[in-house]
Image 1: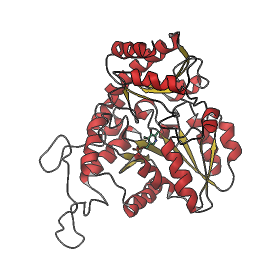
Image 2 (image 1 turned 180 degrees about the horizontal axis):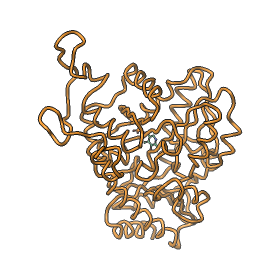
Image 3 (image 1 turned 120 degrees about the vertical axis):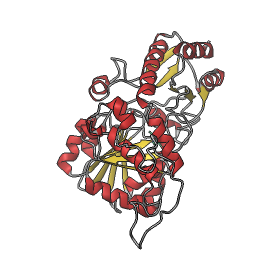
Image 4 (image 1 turned 120 degrees about the horizontal axis):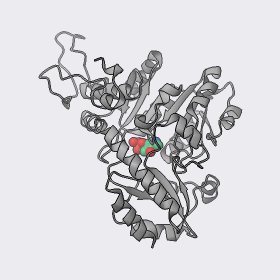
Amino acid sequence: MAANKLRFNSKVIHGGQEPDKAYGAVMPPIYQTTTFAQSSPGKNKGYEYSRSANPTRTALENALASIENGNFGLTFASGLAAIDAVLKLLNPGDEVISTSDLYGGSYRLFKKVFENYGIVFHFVGTEHVSNIKDRINEKTKLIWLETPTNPMMNIVDIEAVSQLVERNELLLAVDNTFATPYLQKPLDLGAHIVMHSATKYLGGHSDVILGALVVKDESLAKRLYFIQNASGAVSGPMDSFLVLRGIKTLHVRMQRHCENGKAIANFLRKHPKVEKVYWPGFEDHPNHKIARKQMTQFGGMISFVPKGSNYNDAIKIVERLKLFTLAESLGGVESLAGHPASMTHASIPKEEREKIGIVDALIRLSVGIEDVEDLIEDLSQAME
Ligand SMILES: *Cc1c(COP(=O)(O)O)cnc(C)c1O
């Protein structure tokens, strides 16, 4: 059966893959080599130098293209290197519209690096499509979205935004790190570029840093491939292998992340010491209907505010957690907790932070795939 006809759970295992041509190895070998022998100058077996292409990387790039319903995958040394490659499509004077509660590293890359090259960034509340529409002018060349957002779990209507770009001939890119293609496929909803920090759910085991882009359009893929090779921030063979292995269990891990996430969101919501829980699966989440339309389930990322708590109270709670590890990052099999005000979002001034809902007591959870009863007991004891 042609791999592109497969259903998602089969695609994560077989999509874009075929047994190794040399010995039939079921998993693509780790081609830990810089260069490839040529029989005559320019005559080779499809590979000549590993920055330009490497068979292990190709296997991962094809797998990603398959599971995101794209035609071309490109992988990079990190999620930020993948974003960097997209921004290099732009020229001085071009404008970008992005979200006000953007991933901190993306914000830093936009403001502290690319602004120096004359690119102009606008940050708006993208959960209201009209805010984006109002910002579009003839210089706008890229809309950069995240949904769900971090850490406020806002939902952005990808299809509605894609209708704006159709009319204006600009690029729509979606950072799909939080949802993964198991929950949401931006290219099917009209995005031109999907980006991943594969460091998170795709790798899934907190043991590799890697980034990816997937596109449908061949000329866009060629422009990005040129930048990937010219700038050189490619993923190495070992890291590509690890993410490929991670992807093979994406569906079963995501299923459990979603089940555990739902149970914990409901537990927190009923807890007398919890004031507010942010999770797109709640029917009264402001954009729940859009989440329901564009996502198959609601994921394992949750933020909450303990009742009557300040900065130090929240720190005490995360310190008391035993099974949840206090750490940056997300999307691994193990549950992690974070305190955005002192960790991921510490560089944003308090006033700015609070404008978008990141209060001092906000705690963010990346719910893992442990027994959910153990996770709930851990949260209970930490809040006592
Ligand atoms: C982690 C993350 C990134 C950056 O990825 P790295 O692999 O750490 O470079 C970008 N976007 C989101 C939403 C992330 O969570």
